[in-house]
Amino acid sequence: MGAVSGFFGTLASMIPLQFCVLDPDNQMFFDLSIFGHSARVNAVALITGLLIIAVTWAFALAINEIRHRWLARKRIIAATDSAPGAFVGYSFSPWIFIAPTVIGLALFTYYPAAQNFFLGTQLARRGVANTAFICLDNFASLITNPLQDAHYYVISNGFFFLAENARYLAVLGNSFFFSVLIVLCTNVLGIAIATVASQKIRGAVVYRTLMIWPYAISGVVVGVVFAVLLGGGGSGFFNQGLQLLGLPSLPFLSDPWWARISVVMAATWNKLAFNVLIYIAALQAVPKELLEAASIDGANAWQRFLNVTLPIISPYIFFVVFLNLNYSFFDLFAVIDNLTGGGPVNSTTNLVVDVIRVGVESRDIGKAAAQSIILLLIVIGLTYLQFRVLGRRVTYGVD
Image (cartoon, rainbow, N blue to C red; front, side, top):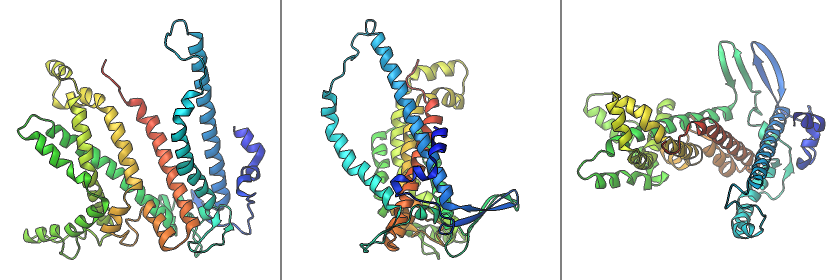
């Protein structure tokens, strides 16, 4: 596949984009310093190379999947006599039943996604009918600065990685910061609370019902509630409690670091109830016989949890981590918009908030489309990585 891509080159790969030629006089550049050696990089050429690699990789995965399915089908046909009930013949009837779903996905998912990609190659403004084809400039402008050249240091000047004049990378860093902490906090606290809540106590049904209520609250309400609780200047409920204790107020919404922590706290509180509910069901599915056998063998509570409970509930953890990861990237806009508004100084602006700001407030539909495509590719890549890494460690069933 690499040889094929190298043969056709950049020009052939840009056929769907109306032959996007990399003209050094018209494209944007940024400075890259590696080990103290600086070089000027064509941003569009870099994006094009990454796009070719991504498409080639996806095509190779698709070919490999088709190959495996074909070999599996040949094995089924060869073992027909020893595998009763296998469907050997080809029938058109399954396509009739899945046609409504396929048509719906094609009209409302795949076609808008393709249209969004081509919109990302246009100079398009909301409210303006005219558009102009600008190739990959919308993507390249995310890692360059039109007013001042962006500069990236990699293991240089005492930094492993440092980006100057690169606002989008700061937004990208905020998104990964939120995703890591939200996934970590909601799962660790969820398992801990579920372990306590799954014990046999009086009124457990009522307690568990009340505990799920925060999940039913919308992100707008969550943002408003935490804005009241964490309001700055001592006006927030939490800061008033600190003042009554003789402690200084904390700048929850005015300090960049505390603002990020406030967003994580609000999102964790919102998603924690759902995680607890799933983990309670998971813990109830753990066979008591295995825990009793481990206890007889001398395992303490922590060893029983690590070696017995955790492997059995691993499918639930895999499922919850997947949902929390998507939530942290796609569904934080309402919480951030009503809690911090993306501030202070863009410290809580993540990818979704930036897409809406660029597309709606700044009316730059083309650049917003490019940002949404990058967000989609990031989530697809993280999902694939999760299935490759965590999926192999998931234990289904108890042998």
